[in-house]
Image: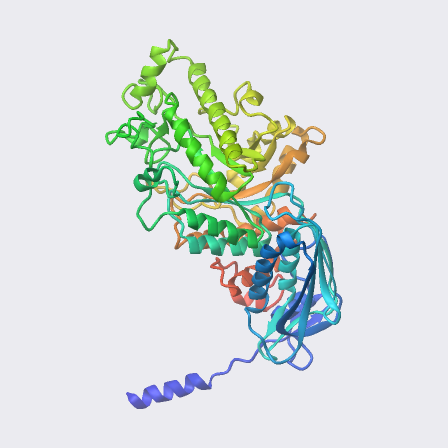
Length: 604
């Protein structure tokens, strides 16, 4: 037995798989060649095919390559002092991304000159993210940008130009690249639901790194729902003490501050969402004990979620209790400071009203929401009149909006927009679709996020009315769709969105809306957002659910090429591998054989 093991060890140690080399033939990498005259795959895909992601507006990489030793000489004299601290962190992130902080013996030191004209250190809806990348390895690469966020984007592109040759043990890049680049949309987003299943900080940081590598700039965190309230609020610790799953599944105040700082380095802003007036239960059930009355209703132990909500557990705010607004004000003030976001999301969809005689009910049910019904009756309102309930909902939303504005003002924080979910669904209760929309949701203050089907969307109507809109049509951009149901036997309520579909999502939607849009209305479209709801995803599974599909959206929102997914396929395959090489957990798109054997070896 020992002799056999020794032979096996010897045989394994003796195996050497030859490195594959590629020749550039008419702008395509062809397998075959040797180390003397040809390139390894990563270098060839850049030098020969310019497989950058997202593809820049204008790019010329030339034909000559240069060797680097992994060291960088920085010239930051053109960076405003007020931005220097963040810019230095961005510089470190670049070195980690491009060289993994490893130096080699061959090649030259890369000189990078950064020129920034603006002093912004907080990403807003108006931040300029454009850059130019010019110069040469011989004289130095110059990145010029209006802001440090544009400079960071330039550094990200530069990192993609740099590849490593294992055989030659040297870094390689084009000798004299020339790139001019700017994004199509200011809002390029990803939403992650961190309430239904807690997503650990390490996973969020990995997500942020992948977003930065792909030039997505907005991470929208759905922080609260009926299932849990995992974020610490300094003045109301009982929200988290009674709402988090455990002491180990909490985003503490210092965690949020560090995550915001980390995200800024990768050019990502964090937007908090506190869902209301539906989707509320966990963390809010202590009201009676504190003398504040019922903060939530339809949440009792005997309440059957199947006739009280769309999914378990059930719960909605008691919108007749002003103490809810008092607590919300404290939450807003805390999050305005900890997140520092100029945009705040207040949820606002999927309200259940019903009545005592209907199959599904909440606010208008005598047993489930007694405090609400008692208030309505005491004030002489007609329970059977829909306008009674829309009026209460409208009044609550307007009060909540005022409380949010005051909270931001009290913290000396800038509030650009309040976000609210919106859809065209007329089968349920839908405040956004009601008359008086511009009074409830002032056009200059609100930005809607539409989730409905692109074929029957409220988006064109909102754009025509002058609202800023971010699109997340479920049949184009929901990442959790597909697979099985999680509350009963059967399949998911929505179909899987492939990266092909996501890549073409903006084109698909705009084509459907083209005849409905008034001249200039499309300018109100601020971007799109892929959404990952986590009913059946958690920290261990979410990354392969999000990546690399979210990167497909990133290119559409940054470059918006005239072509479709198929033209992007070789670069998408390379970017997926790039993400994986840099430690991002990502799903595979094809067998490795496909990328090793050239563009479209497998894609029909």
